[in-house]
Length: 88
Image (cartoon, rainbow, N blue to C red):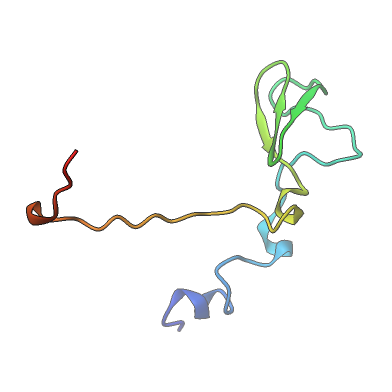
C-alpha cells in the first residue's frame, strides 16, 4: 500500500496525459466552437480566449509554451509588532 500521495501517483502529482481525459481548450488554426453557445467568434488574450457572444472563457492550448507559462508570484508578509510600527 502506498504511504504517500507521490507513491500512489507514480512519483508525480499530475497524472500522465493519457489518464487526464479530454480538456476543452482553444486551439490555434482550428475552428473552435463555443461550448456555451456553439458560435465561433472569440476574443483572444495572452492565456485565455473569450467567446464574443456569451463570454465563455477557455484557456489557450499554447499558453504554457509562451514565455515559460504562467508566473506565480508569492508575497510573504511578516507580522510586525507595535514597536516596529511605521510613521506616516
